[in-house]
Image (cartoon, rainbow, N blue to C red):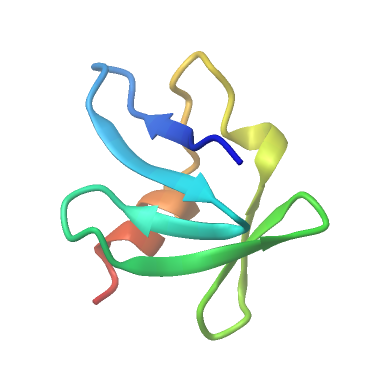
Length: 70
């Protein structure tokens, strides 16, 4: 399964999705997972819908918070 990369508006890679898990690009740690085309935190909190992570770089604020959680 190929990686789906997540970028911000400036072109910086924020993370990636691979095998249903969401990874933070800076720490390389798993920070969430994908289920039914929705992104969840490791605490099973809904973060955003995959459709919100579009190619234009309009990354939802909730997803940015997920990446900042340690």
